[in-house]
Image 1: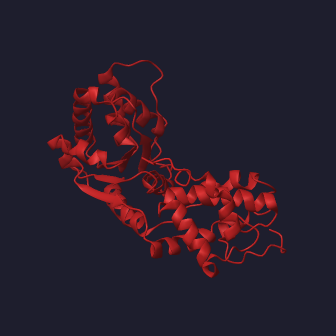
Image 2: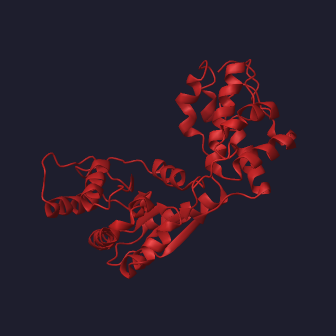
Image 3: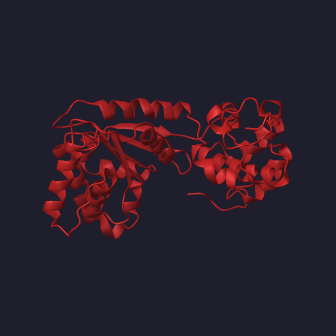
Length: 301
């Protein structure tokens, strides 16, 4: 990293990207720009408990819910990233403490089982019967010593009300798979998922802890924004702490949602890099305000 850069508070893991010219810098490292919040820290504690739980015939799992842009998916992905697969010299299989997948739009158990096997790196190369596919998936979940399975966007399977009977069958499949593996599962989704899970008593008994992620208050938002500043790959320090107007405008545009803040800061970084200013100011935020889906008047679901 060049000695001419003036961003002393930038976290060390982001400094290596500063020598990359243009917007390509963001493409190389934006997936690393993430800040844990009080809610995500609470979720991590519960996820850790699921991953390390003792084997059980009735394991207790977790629901992570909240409105869109409250950070559900990023929280689950960040937890997965902290627990990468590792080789066990005494086993022919890599150990996967956590696997993450998204739910299919159609409540189809076969799709879920195939996704699980793909995450474990052991897909079947032929077209098995549903029973054989399920048996193989359970065997591999145990062989790879999976601690917990995280299934995100579970609310997507409930979008079509004509599928009610399929959804019930899918939830029964989930309960049975949890029982067969003896491991807690984690599901993520919007608050619709709470009603969906509650509609089937037995699966509700397997997913009986709920973490609700919420938008931030202004004071919480200010602290999160300061933490983000230390992760932004810009060559000059933005000094958010000294700019109350910037903090207030960013809060107004994002309404305290961390997902929207992430998009806003990415757009602002593009402007800062393109202009050569290499820092985010109130003027920078004002220049990207019309890119916000909220500010142009569209309702965010």
